[in-house]
Length: 136
Image (cartoon, rainbow, N blue to C red):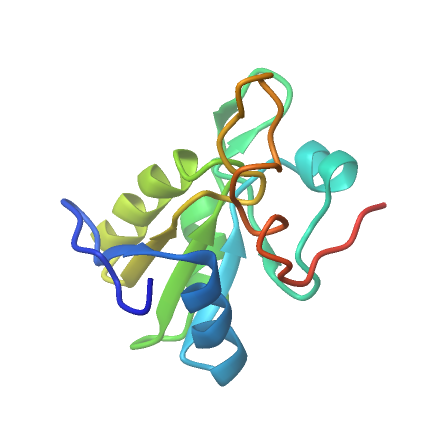
């Protein structure tokens, strides 16, 4: 996908590859909205802004999300939001839009959808497409 796809309540959905291009060119800030535990156990994107939408354990809303997002994204700058599969990042994109930002959800997320064996990371996602990430 070379262009953003329209969405209700936020600027749109983008492929991992387009999000990467925008981020690398300085056109957007990449915010990883997964929990600290997910980033530690599954992997993370180096230099992305780590800002959980919900907190582990219990998945309670992160009371510091709004302030963290405002601190990370300069006025007028796009923000691309990444979660595990592209679901929490939609909610985060809607919230960022409410805060006055041009916000995009990254389709497929970090791990992508589960395959027929209920395994993620094999049918899509940031890692699947060979974009930069680390584990550990």
